[in-house]
Structure formats: structure tokens, C-alpha cells
Image 1 (spheres, rainbow, N blue to C red):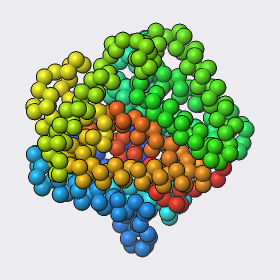
Image 2 (tube, rainbow, N blue to C red):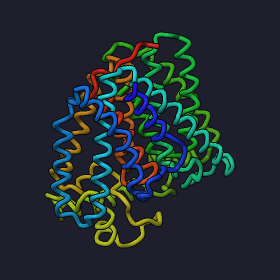
Image 3 (cartoon, rainbow, N blue to C red):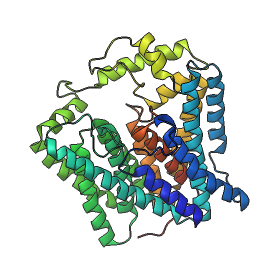
Image 4 (cartoon, rainbow, N blue to C red):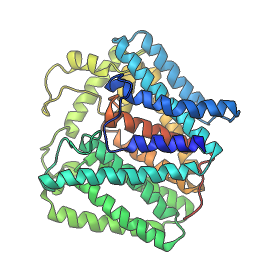
Length: 406
């Protein structure tokens, strides 16, 4: 019970609509890492004391990735920033093993984690919606001062996509008609939130989840359960796009029917990817060191302001970013780790609601990171989203992540 209580308390802190606390005064870039270690350490110590198994199907891949991170750190451009980045990574790996250990000891911990995530995201989105309504629903805020700790529409959009993935899994898995109806209502609210956040890549993440859900349903011969969700998405999308000029413009941007009038357009991303590729060619084997992308990219590969007023904080693609920092071997190790998680998730998804939801969440995060690096920062929402992803890695990798059908 101690392990379950600690994990539940940590997930509450992770999804909490507030700034990351720093009781030890270690600074913004270390505060979240300290919380990760404080939550994981007691769980892992108890596991060792009780001789619980810590092994997962991803151990060798996690170990290989860590090895390349450490090797790249030796030649890092900025040792201090690299140290902070490595500490954050070790904190996430500790949470990964703390989660798998807790679920292995208490399988019912897995649905508890899902429940906290869904409720927490709902609270975060309601607070963000309250601020958005003050500006008007047609506005597209770049920054959300409320809720604290979740500053912008990219982070809020990814949270909404995570919630969508979990609710979608519940609709498909539930054997009770009233649970399906209630979940569809929540899903409808979630889709409206997603639309009004005006995050195009979050929309793509939702489409990606829908695509793999179709494939999974065909495999399980339960295609009819997708019809209700598809009709709901079509109805909400039709009404909102027909009534909202901002949505029409952004939707047109995606399909090339409208001129690009917003920041970080596909053309701009292509330019950033091209420059990042040059950076990788210049540092192919060891990269520039963990956490050093912006320090090298901005002065040497993008010295002038972009049209959106920024210079290039990250590579706008998670795996390109990792490759630039770790070199080709490290980038390959990170990519293979992600592929392994997706393969394991695909194989285990039909076995339980939890593993199906976990697989959908990892898919949503993967699609979202194709055009961004949501984990580029060690503070606030970016750091928390990275840790949340490692928790869902653990849910995918743990064969004990099972729950009854509601």
C-alpha cells in the first residue's frame, strides 16, 4: 500500500494545475528531478528489501540509451547543462521502474494512475478554458497564465490528446452501455477543448490515435465500437468549423487550402529540420551533448530571428533533437526504444483497458512530437510531460497492467 500511495501522490503532483514546487531551493531546472527521485526512491528501496522483480522487456534498450547519453556527456559543449539533463533523465528512469514495480506488486495501481490522469487533465483544461473565455473563444492565446505550470497551448493540447486516448480506450473496452454513454459525453467535451486550444499538432495526434484504433479494432473484430466515436468527432468538427473562422483557417493550413498565417508553419519546420540535419552531419558520432541543442544551434545554424520571433529552442522533432544532442548512435538507440514500446504496446493492447489506453497515449505523444519536441525543457509542463510519457512506457511494458472491464 505504501508503494501505491506514493505513486498516486506523485501522479497527482505531476498533473497538478500549479507550478512545480521547489521546497529545497535547488532551482527551476532541478526542482522536478528532485520530486521524481523523492517519489521513486522509497518505492525502489522497498522493492529491493522485499526482493521484488524490477526487470522489464525494455531493460536492455533503456540501458543502451543511457550508455550513449553518458558517452555523449564526456564531450558535451556545456557540462553544467548536460549534468542537469542527465539528472532529469535518471529521475524519469527511476519513475519508470518505480511504476513497473508498483504495478507488479499491486496491479490495480494501473487504473488508479489512469483515473488520476483523466481527472487531473480535466481540472487543468477547465482552468485554461476559464482564462480563454475571458479573451474570447476566437482568440488563440500563445501563453496561458492559468493554470500555473502549464503555460501554452502546445502543452495543454498534448494533455487533451492524452485524455482523448484514455477515454477512447474506455469506449472501446467497456462492456457496460451506460459507461460507454457517459464516456462518450466526456469525449465530446474533450473534443471541444481540443478544437478550441487551436493546436494543430494535437489534432494530428488525435487522428493518429484514431488510425491505430481502427487497425486494432479490425484485428480484434470490434470495428462497430468505433462508429459512435467517429460520428461524434464528425458532428463536433462540422459544427465547430462551420461556426469558427479561426478553426477554418487552421484546418485549411493543415491541408494547404489557406495561406500560412501562424507561427511554426510546415515550411518553417522543414527549414529547422534541414538545419538540424546539418548540425548532425557536423557532430555525427557524439553529438553536442545532452541538453545542449539550443546552445549550439542558435549561434551557429540559426543566428537570426525566425518569422515567429524565435531562433530555434528545439529541433521541432523529438528524435532529430535527440540525434543532434547524442549523435547518430544515441539517436538510433532512442528511436529503437520508442519503436520497442510501440511494438510491445500493440501486442498487449487487446489484453486490458490499461494497456490499450497506455498504447494510445504513447501513440498520441509520438505523433505530437513529429512536429515538435515537447520535452526540450527541464522546467514546468515540458518536464512533467516527459515524465508522464515514461509512466506510460511503464504501463505498456508491464504485463501486470490489467484491470477488469467496467
